[in-house]
Length: 348
Ligand code: FNR
Image (cartoon, rainbow, N blue to C red; front, side, top):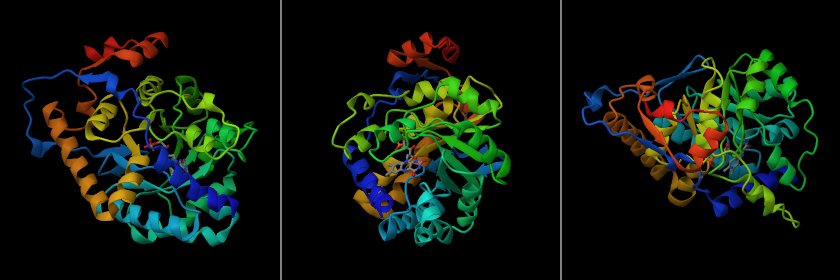
């Protein structure tokens, strides 16, 4: 019951605290080119991740399930939005259903509503191989996320305090699952060192889950009496995190997320090298405030606008978008320069 109530609290506090709007993507500017030599009709943003072909690079990132009928209703409507717009969707952590089978319906509904769609399962870094297999089978997942969220757990009053063994559990799960594994953060970002550690144990798909959007330190601080305020500004902003991650190895598929809301931020993240983009809090808010139909309309607008922006940039597909020139300024420039990454490589 405590876990189910926490799921409801997370939704309500996430909606109340909103998005930080400090992802660092505001520091990235495209260099305008006046002769793009392209027609909008030829723009295609199909992407391939872990052998899966996605008709949209944008996916609904993990949020919910495990909180009874309310979370079942949200997952049903998110799954319908995913189906109608051709997007992949991740369900929230399935530990609720692993511990209490009565919660399974709140996750399975996503598969029922979207039998042919790309659905992604989710558990935390504490999961065993057996739990990951059960969770994956529960929703006939096409891919599976393991989230790592140390700062959230430390801030959560009832959260984990022992983080020994996560990397080796991830390695085992990656070897044992028969669907592609994605390792993700939840809004604190990943450094190149973390990405290297994951790469070294065979993980090839990483969602950086950067700082700048939904802030789980703030959310958990609202749930505790003694506030750990120093975590409220803790994390690697999304733009810097994507760039750190893509520079580790071309063999990796890096996904961008954390505070991504609009088509321009999406185009920038893809141009920086992300192969896909997760959106969580923004879609949750759109759905809560405007309902399912408006959410679907908005996603369709995002797809149209992304194609318009790609046309302006002369990019007919995502590999071409990655070749566009960008200037990186502000805090993101300083961060990357100190981290040994040459920003001028993106501008020339
Ligand atoms: C989340 N997120 C999340 N992530 C995860 O891996 N498992 C989970 O169960 C949840 N639960 C969850 C609940 C709610 C209400 C929100 C808003 C988010 C984190 C999410 O997938 C994402 O990493 C962060 O929210 C950052 O992205 P946005 O929200 O800034 O787009």
